[in-house]
Length: 140
Image: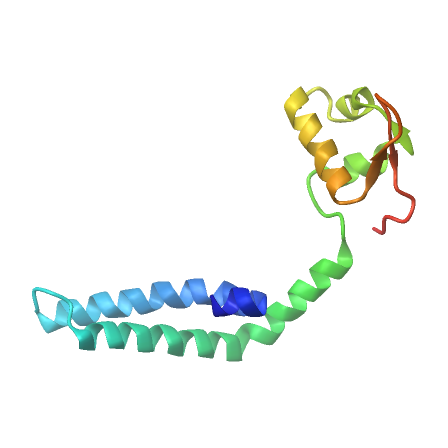
């Protein structure tokens, strides 16, 4: 929740790994203790190890991962499977133009979803019943 509130991609990435490591440490602690049920000490140890791993991963790899996120976002705003298809379309196009570029491998529902996403993201606007136009100020 902390990573989501701060929109911290680095912490969000490493929290998943640290949780698995902490869980495994807790399992080993439990097995070595020989108790039938996990103890508070076992849970505290697992949590402590997860927090320790998270902090050490962020300390060691955080800056490099953050730089990769920045580089990736600057490199391409319209990154995705349909990026090259969008660039190949004429400034004004129809669903049939899009279908031709997708080489018939897309259902009508998928084509409508693609167009819907492009409209939602402000890349295109509807000009009439069957035509869409690319928005001029879309940056690559």
